Length: 247
Image 1 (cartoon, rainbow, N blue to C red):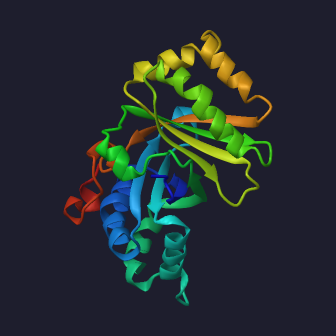
Image 2 (cartoon, rainbow, N blue to C red; image 1 turned 180 degrees about the vertical axis):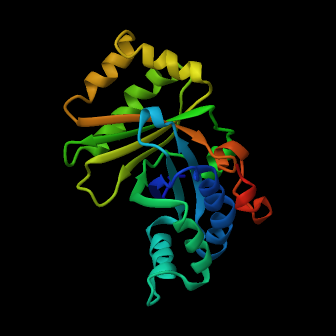
């Protein structure tokens, strides 16, 4: 069955040494409420490997039940004079002391991209993850996704990288893609990077999209303790613990 979900993707800037606390606040303290009130699932919460992007930073992804589900989620959050669900005022207050800024986007999955329930069922996980953000020529994001499936998959799989998700960013002139790969070990990542200009299949892949991709940034992620890729399930209320106990 085609994946008809919609995804929220967030880059979050963390204040000082609060990344572990923030990730717990998002998974244990937010996600169970979002599941109950919005039918929103946690797709993943990761810490960004700062050497490969900004730091300290977190990536959150949430799975909504299609565009209609996203509309209901927006109504639930914004149909208040404060533009914020009043029952979550305390949660927002705590979050404000842990983060300073976020850059969000809505993502549409390739029809063959697995949902988070399917990924957990299939046991997809990694010691690290590659997050690729690709800017394309306007109107060409779907072409990039098609070539990804036809050419990139076998090239990446040689290094045991498994495709976790392929997405086009909505509302941006069909000009951006985000790709998530699960990588079994750091050594699998290192072998892949070392082969970028040596492996004919990888060279062919990059050449095949050279006229489509105008910019490309790959960074690395590591699962938060309660991320579904790590645990194989959604975060639960029983996972909660006082933030002051989190190092």
